[in-house]
Amino acid sequence: MRTTMMSVMAAALLSVAALADEPKAVAVDAPPDGTVTLSGGSVAVGVGYVWGHGDLSYQNASHRFSISGLSIVDVGAANISATGHVYNLKRLQDFQGNYVAATAGLTVGGGGSAAYLKNEHGVVMKLEATTVGLRFNLSADGVRVKLEK
Image 1 (tube, one colour):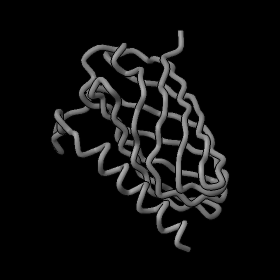
Image 2 (cartoon, rainbow, N blue to C red):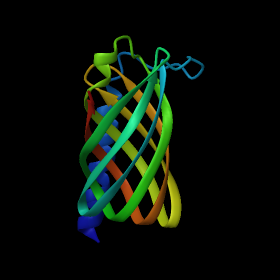
Image 3 (cartoon, rainbow, N blue to C red):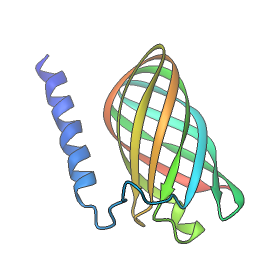
């Protein structure tokens, strides 16, 4: 129990630290610069691995990307589908990068979660995901997004 509580606290602290440094805050009413849809999966026992592919709609064009990374305080396996908005995207190449994500969700059969991701270029993704499988996560994630050719 103590180990679980320490893990939850560590994830919360990492999430707060990652999101506290917000030089380019996203206004609630700001229009998004683009939209994303993605699908993928996850598998975890404490520390997990997430992967997937998606499409970024930006400046009237669709751009394919891949996503992969690690999560902590995560247990289970699930298929994930997500949609969301992208903010602070001024150049397409700034979409690529290492994102820090804060997520929370529960899946038993079918469920959902919300995620706020930010990369080193200040690009922000706000995602809503639906999952199928068995998964519990309250985590700070690190994911790599790479545009495909």
